[in-house]
Picture 1 (cartoon, rainbow, N blue to C red):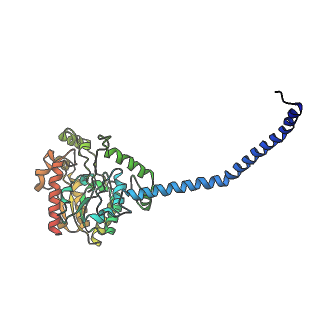
Picture 2 (cartoon, rainbow, N blue to C red):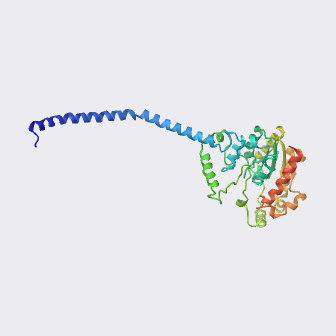
Picture 3 (cartoon, rainbow, N blue to C red):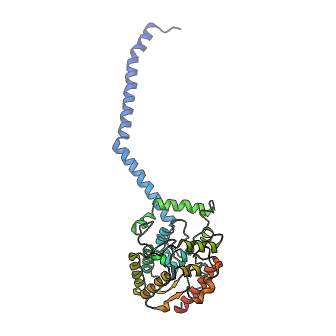
Length: 349
């Protein structure tokens, strides 16, 4: 049935009103949205999400506490996953002083001294290796500062000319900034990533699992080892590089030793055993360094010299080395036992 003319007319007359009503509703919705997502409100929402994100990130890092700064460490074992300088500096704030009573300090020459076996539950000796790869005295001192302030009273110091060949921090700026970075930073993110890689052994050639364990021992032997130690020694001698001495570093070494004595640290020091042929090629330089350290320490009974004829059985045996100076597992095992014996003999627990 066709609509009547009147009906068509009524519908036609009503259309403008319907259109106006729909337009008013659309305008009303746009006004509402404009009011809800105004620039100021948008900024507030973004700010709120940023703050919430920061709180979550900081909270997560506090809970993980990879450096033992924020939670009790008595029942925890904290290895170093990445950036040894940053990690050991932060571990020296709380973890090391709380869990260990003796510390080894030095450069890479002492970094692989494996003292793990001495840290058993029955032993009174709790020892940590706080040595830093490639470090100079400027980089070792901040770690020692934390240890002394934390109450560590027993130390074994590896004295090497490499400690004073230059001065100043080469990689990181030690201080409060690193502490704050433990709550969230690029270094912390990198540490988590490398930690996962090490844990699942994804890149063993570059990031071996448990390379620096919870006792600070750096098992770098496989990374540094050369095929022929004798040939490596001959190349080093042929290169004839001088042992440089930085005057600022030399003064820092003096202050470092004074700090140990002023704080009544029970320490012994030792001159790292240099392969006999390397020692002979630069004997004057090594002996000059030894005289300087003896003058600073002013107590020969605190010092062990592994570069005398008494220890030629060690320095002439290539199997004690992995290159021209760093020790093999056999070499570090022999040296570690001598050092621990001498230290506990002088300072019984």
